[in-house]
Length: 538
Image (cartoon, rainbow, N blue to C red; front, side, top):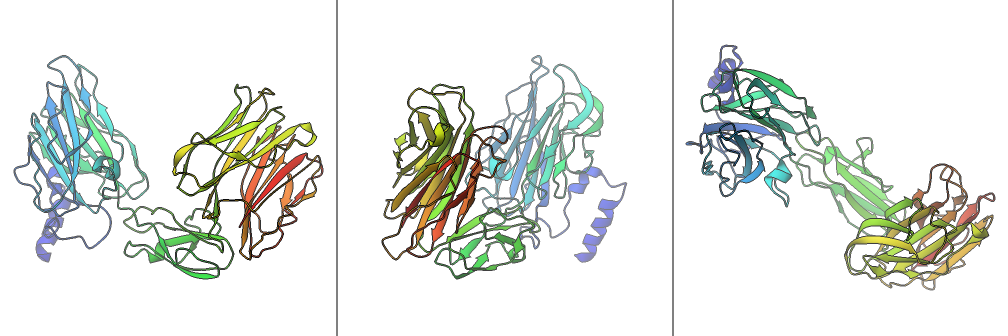
């Protein structure tokens, strides 16, 4: 067999060998056995009118693509059961100058699939690929393929130029396939566009299939000239490579210090796992490895498989290690300029699980009225009263504990008349694991020149204390330092107008590993009017 494969390789490379015959596979390939290497593989092709009389050998999980043309109609050929329509580009000319093509896909359930039932089809080309991404809750059209790009020639005219439109893939691991249909039999349709390989030719040169035969980040529009003018329809589409499995952690939670092992279910991925311990998303420049020592409370470890050959990058796995089991995370923020009535600030699409808590914060210019807050149309409770140091800044702090899970908008609204032109900063913070669903202490401070404000709060048990700190400043912008956070404070966000605006909202969280008063939260900027809240949980 090795000698036969060598001879076949020499024939495929020979300039006199027909281009469309390059769709042949080496002996042993496409035989139904699983491939030995990762990455997309072309298996084989077949042609026909409404069906393939003989379907090439295949295995469960293989991707089938079919491109079926029909003339003198804009109604696509019938889509057989088990297939998914990807695209149906058409030319709507006069009654005899209509044409349409159907691009369809399916994933083989076994080794005896059929390609048949495309009723009203005139010409069909089908290709089979292995080691593509698999369906993950959607369809082959949404999960395995990208959005197709179609070309149709000008209505009621004919052309000898076959145009295959450009495609930008999701990453540099995907292939691009190109298909063409014309009702006019023409030589040259089997000529693959630049950087593609011809895989199949059907119906006296009326339909053709090609692909890049390699992973590409993008594919540029290319033209092929044929000998006979006709109506032209083409489709180019991304074929996605398998995605590496999202890393998991062992243990997945716990109290620091912890020795954490990171792994991915994808074979061979251990050398391609990158992780961070500061809560940021890993990149190729992040630390590579499968073990990490967690010593700081709290620590969020995130990991991702990056640049594993034959796979697109994985999703981001995350695990948090903390003494109390409470986790605090940012769920969004908005800087809303004024000139509206009613004056609102909305953070859209916040998803919470049942049992979570949400905290809302706002900083505005002097609106002269109260603020109310809702999440998913459920009212939040205001903590303390709105602070108004010096008359130019209003700050508010709200919370809602033990929510019923769902997705909704966080909406803060001014409830009485005032300055509708004022800047309105708002933000939401999610708390998970807050089993008592009650704050231990709420403390606030305001001063036209806040220098140092504290909670004065002491936990009443021996458990660790966690909390949210928010600092606000008026008559300044994000280019100004409004204060320096002390102790173990971790910033979640700092928002506001970048220059010449009001106001700034700077917020985050802290963890205290012992039951002690949390003091010295902020050293403020004495030249900036500021205010703030500290809320502790135990």
